[in-house]
Length: 117
Image (cartoon, rainbow, N blue to C red; front, side):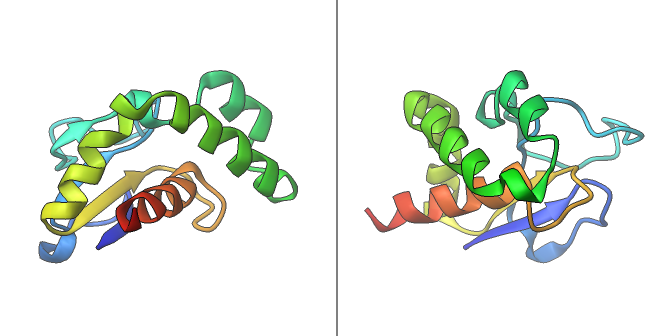
């Protein structure tokens, strides 16, 4: 199972293995407080893509297409997530305020597709 959780929400016992999937550290969160297995900066969208998207829901479909292309070009970045998901619950930790249109939502979809294959 692959779950999503905001970095600002309390950790849960049901989270399993937690990975931060952001290029930038979440604003206002101390590194000593956020309980994560690892911070995978390279699995996040490129700075150029992130800035282009700017969390605009109107750009969501194109963002997903471009982000998936970036992910396909860099499988080493997301393989640890796939491995963790195959061994138990995986929680993708993200910082966006928009819970429907963010890189973790797209990454969850991408990983779930690859789990089936």
